[in-house]
Length: 347
Ligand code: FUC
Image (cartoon, rainbow, N blue to C red; front, side, top):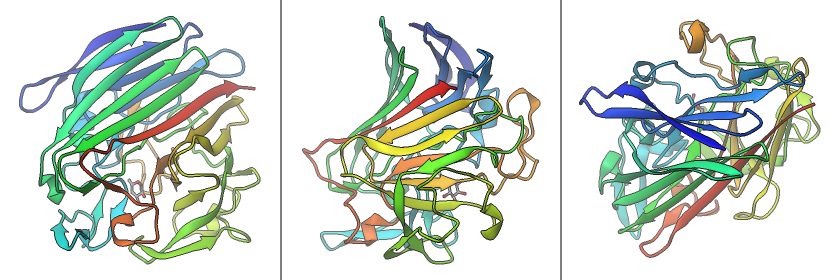
């Protein structure tokens, strides 16, 4: 395995930003920047051994500085939505920065995707290579209580896996929900839309939501709905039955906290496949519904509607206001941990 560090530009404050390229002996390559702890690219072979970048994003730091799409980003302190941008802990009300109408999305105006992370460790060993990034989110940032010390580790293995793991600790009771927001296209980024990918999601229920995508508290069945991916189907097979595409939080089968199957995806023209396992209880499936061709991404590609899909492993949206949902509370003295494994293949 191999790790290569390259300069990636400077933030508007003049701080130097880097890209860490992790390469496996089979040629898989993951590039990660410490700005936003973003996965910049993921190169994997197709069934004929042709290498291709399977994530959407930008060629340079400038693209990421102002981005609204969360390409490849680490999302926090709370991924997904918190209704009315508020919650209470032990009778104390916390008001967050609203950034989607009255609600908060993906950690607020300046979430973890827009801050510079510190590089803790960059290592290449025989069968894995990894980079560990850290960020201390100060007490009160975007309205959240507690200084939160966060770590994200991206590890590439010789087993063709990209393993993304998280750790967090706080000095005051708080909430935390972290995810990676990569947009995948296994045909190769910018090639065509993702509607022809075969998808299986290991979930029979989803969190029912109101018109602002805030959960009602009910867990509804996917059966007999376009949301049912228990048996593999193409992403496009029923997408037209939905208003603009998929943007749903699926409740994964299996026990929370254990590494379990989340989803399997395969792109027929290249044979590229990806299998996701996670310790998280849910996954947000999003089909890039907001893309309209106006974003110029890597290699000059323009991203049209459904140019990529996200499978964001996470806790349920609005958990801080939903006592029946798995808890996202983190107490001082506890350690939050989370792991998601993406295994790539071509067949
Ligand atoms: C997903 C969705 C949101 C939003 C964002 C860019 O997480 O849940 O609706 O559009 O991506």
